[in-house]
Length: 249
Length: 315
Image (cartoon, rainbow over all chains, first blue to last red; front, side):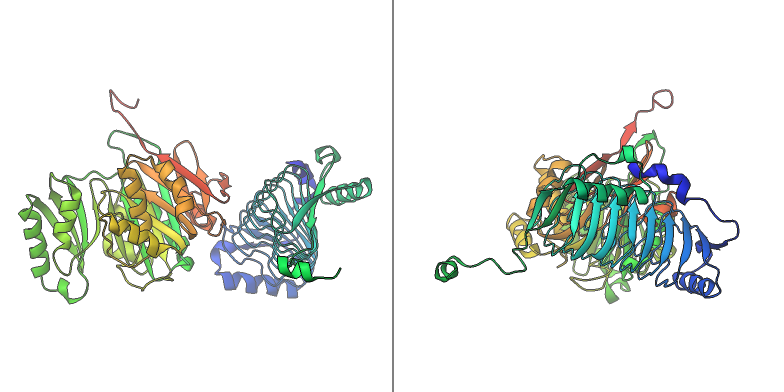
């Protein structure tokens, strides 16, 4: 996958950091421990044995560097602001729900509803993403090096999704604003979505974002297309035939 | 909410069996947050010393009075069957029996006894389900000692019907031996499906929407339709949200709805396949770092057990 070459840049663990073994803690104890460490100024934390458990690292509101040594479950790193985190494994559903700012990298695949309602920051997936990627996004960027699934960008309001691979069915369904860039194919479009070409300026912008996220130029598709809203739905521009006849335009 | 899990070993040499019961216990325990009301498993590919094992449930005070089971025994013998063994845990009875006729006749004879419910009748599989989590299920019913070739399991959070044992999964697909289903989701056309099947002579023991899936699939199988095709047809015929797993005597099949509404992840090697609603269940049993795969919407997958013949050792 295109972004995997950035391995070296993100996985250097810090020997001055703290190690937290998730196996020994309940979910509540784990989150309380993280919050306590951050408030003590211990902001570089390595988490071992996450074992794909849910709700790990919730509500972290200050700058920190986190590394999860293994897969995480649902709602990992939700309600966070200013974090810099890497998950070395898979993530379940709802990764980075409501992210305000910061960066989350997942080295393998993510489940559904990645980046749900996020407002800023970046979520970077080196593998594939599941259904409803970027659902109801309100800002920020989701990057998927592989493919993204069914209902990608569902009800998106703002922000960007960049998929280097293919996008599944019903892409961009009920989008308000926001843009889904894709380098491969789209299985089908969702309600009120359309495909537009990407001009040279925009292409350069997308490439720039991807390279900042760790991609190498040669791994980036040469030309992206984008999915945007037709903007008929929310302007309530669908008239009944009788109404249309009576309208004076 | 509900959680489902299954495990299948692809090849066995001769009598070899695997700790399917224990693995299901672990996977279901990891997902107990998805369902706290009850837990159930179907262990498949067992070797019984009799034609069938019937798992019966006698709810309420009827179990205290042994008369009900005596009546059931008489009913079986009345149609030409013979009882080999009966073991009992509270209201649950495990009956080893021999019978050479149609399983429907056997099932109807037992159901004719008031107060008896059938959890399963199988040649090589049995369903054990009870309230509580999987460790409680094991404490009461010893599921970790059951070995087989494959199995399915379920943790239940009741949404469409009561919290009780009768409405727990897995559901046996009356009257077909060794077919069961576990389901995560809700069917919205349950009544229409049930009515159609009842008109064709099938009977249902509960008002639970998931029970109809097993009967629907088994009905297709009895018409000679292959499991994969039956699952494909169900993608259109079932309305609602679902990820469900069917167990047969020779394998398992999964169907995932068109909305990708209910989660499902797969772990597969050359030796086995493990599937579950959440990766946290897989990681509890399969710690090696093999990739987990999440199928998308409108998907059907099947796996079979291949019993390798024993001719001078492994073939």
